[in-house]
Amino acid sequence: MDSDVANGEGRIGLDIGTSKIMSVRQSGSQLKATNEVNAFLPLPYSKITENILLQNKVHYYQNNGHFFVYGNNAEKFAGLFNAETRRPMSGGLINPDEPAALTLIKVIIQGLVKKPRSKSDLVCYSVPGAPADAPNDLIYHEKLLEGYLTELGFRSKSVNEGQAIVFSELEKENFTGIGISAGGGMCNACLSYLSVPVISFSTSKAGDFIDKSVGSVTGESATRVKMVKEQSLDLASSPKDKIEEALHIYYDEVISELISTLNTSVSRASSEAHQLDRAMPVVLAGGTAQPNGFRERFERALEASSCPIPISEVRMSPNPTQATARGAFIAAVYDS
Ligand SMILES: Nc1ncnc2c1ncn2[C@@H]1O[C@H](COP(=O)(O)OP(=O)(O)OP(=O)(O)O)[C@@H](O)[C@H]1O
Ligand SMILES: [Mg+2]
Image 1 (cartoon, rainbow, N blue to C red):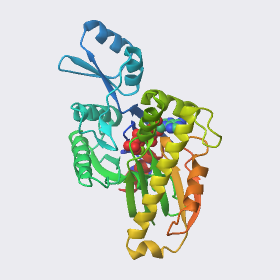
Image 2: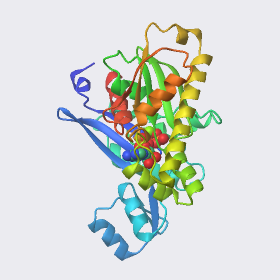
Image 3: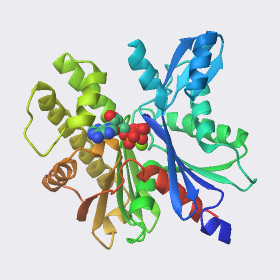
Image 4: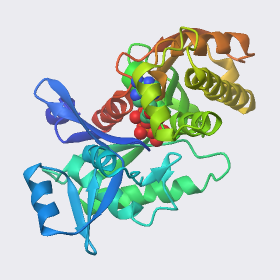
């Protein structure tokens, strides 16, 4: 590894998530994370709107007589106009039902990675595990993103999101253990042994599923449920109202799906997975893992399940929302 690479020069970790896209790069002796909400809102073109967007330094893209306000300001504008934002991705992958998906995801990625300084600059970007019901969709997603990064002048490499959690959180354990990212569109997990991914999988029940399901049974909008969930949910104390009660129920469903898929994936895997010479730590990360009490609920459910491999501990990432991007950055630094 040359000395520039050793300190992370010319290396970017990119977490391409359903809810947000985050880049991590070296800045002096620190890591610098920058993110954009992975959403946009089209506004009709007018000179006044353009001036307001420019004055307020709002990120937008102009096309076909429309402004597309994207990233962190999209939600603010949507609130103002009482409109819903549109999303380039759903369920961890490019959204097939969104006509502007490809353009907007490219614009958001470009704003975060900027331009390479040299031809050797490398971006490691996260990809989910293949969805069980449509495993080939991942090929399209991964290759499109690779193409965009090549167009921007970067070398690129994909890293499984669960594996990125292992890179970010389990360096002291020689990158051995189970990394889990509970996100917006998906939960992603990877069992890694000495940095080699042995099993990886994804489940489709995650944050968006919780918002939609709780909204459906309580008669609230998914947007309002998301707000309540993010601002006040405490999974360690008893629910105080109808929304909280439903949030607890659907959180349990997300955890149960995650654990049953983990157990069947390990059971189905080759015999090497059963001959691991040590108990595995589990690390939890991602926005959906953030509420107080999530770790304990997950640990109790895992203990009560018949997990085929010994687990040493269930640990929470100290920085659950940055773990994927940090892990992708570490993957880029190791890949000299
Ligand atoms: N404090 C919080 N409490 C509960 N949920 C939260 C909190 N903050 C964010 N979330 C939820 O986390 C999810 C987003 O998580 P994250 O940013 O890890 O997803 P992502 O990486 O964009 O998506 P994915 O990995 O599924 O493609 C959303 O469903 C959001 O509502
Ligand atoms: Mg994610």
